[in-house]
Length: 237
Image (cartoon, rainbow, N blue to C red; front, side, top):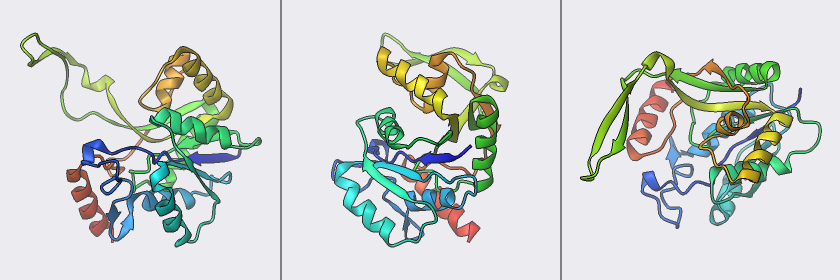
């Protein structure tokens, strides 16, 4: 089946210390002199399994800068820039609506994961083609504690979760087109918002399969992550 990619890039990056000016937006920050989102797009553009183009929802105030950066590159796939929404889910939905007929698989990848292994995209797409929905994930290494806020405004542990049953979700995540549409329709009808697209599939009551991800598939969320990314990039170079 033909596959297209959605790369949500409309986040405010509050954990990075960004303001509405976009001056510190993580997807626009440079890694080895190139914006983080361009690194992610390059990895997707190199995936032979993708033929249906890349859809890039961004903040309206970032659109001109993003398009200028894209025009400075040479791309195999067509890249469609569009206005994102207030949440990740809204942004992905807006991109999903733009995807034409004939696309059977959708892969979603974070704009702030610049070290994507192209082979991982193929493995996740193959699993989604077979089973309907698949995500990349890595095992939890640390002990996982469930907590709650106590009455004196402190945090207390309520349980220790079995680590062998916990994985840390990454992107790429891939879905059959019709399955993701049903998941979006149900979520929109019920006002449900998930933190990623696989949560919508779970809300629909359908299984999501896990494909081994990579510890190098770093998500840049805060300034320390950017420092690690610089070191990883220098090592790779």
